[in-house]
Image 1 (cartoon, helix red, strand yellow):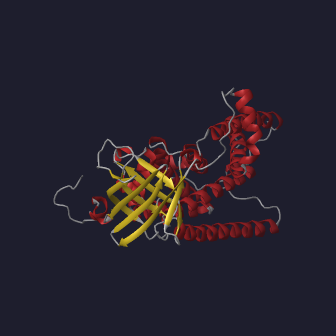
Image 2: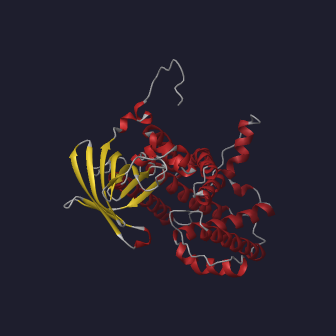
Image 3: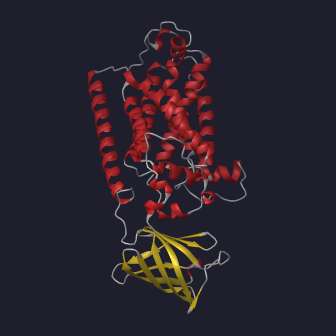
Length: 412
């Protein structure tokens, strides 16, 4: 059965027009967000009357004020475009040809996102294992988002499971015969992702919700048939939404464009995933000092400080997470996240103090594989620290492992 077999209702045509305008604006908007800068600024000042200008542009957070104002602008333009389109084209009985191309646009956009996010989990670049500081950080000091990252990063197997599900959904979306199954699989996977983003305050709420809506749009032409088959247990006819080619060259062009797009997406996803895995993932090279250390002795200006939990300046532990990222844990368990610069020749690392008024530099001497001595200056003070390296495998989270048989629950 083809959707052209009957005329579309007024509501169907209005919803379709809105979907075309909205998703076209949204997909172009997320790819070329800088084009929205003047629109966002104008809406924020003259329509929403925000207290201050929108100065934070799109970054690692997808839920900035800019993003919300942008979506609001897209919604307004989509409503306006739908109204004008409905007035100018109210006599058209259906949009069968345009429906196919809308589904292609949404299918390919969603497929690309599902495959990229899927391979980010397969290569474990989205959720690498928590760095040493995460093992020292009290659970109550984790943010909800940080808790998700630690949870996901712990298990390579679960990353594979969720990543393969996402990537497979994306692959199925590329082909008309399997697009409905791909949409249903995407709905299942994305429902969980959206729930995590909302309930653990992960700032990808807007984007993941739009991906979920795209999956629903793709599945929408088949929803009635799915309901009839699974809930009413009645037979249904097949539905085919096919392209309309007026000339033979159009069909061949469509085939090659699709093939090139899939090949390019696959190549860039795999290559970029492999490179990022070597740079940021679990397989990234570790600094020689990588690990967690207990500060056994802390000497400041010649005085040895006792390990008092009320001391907010004495270091309790040090975590070397990355060649550019260290974390110092103070006696009161608060954490200093330091962006440092290592000098492998001088065996030093340095960072700027608050407000960039003074550079702090510590020299490290690795006495053996378990002991390190730090000497140098922190702000106005001279310091010397003796550090003992911790065996990370002694943490219960790492030592527990997997057990087929559990005579009693091991819940700590």
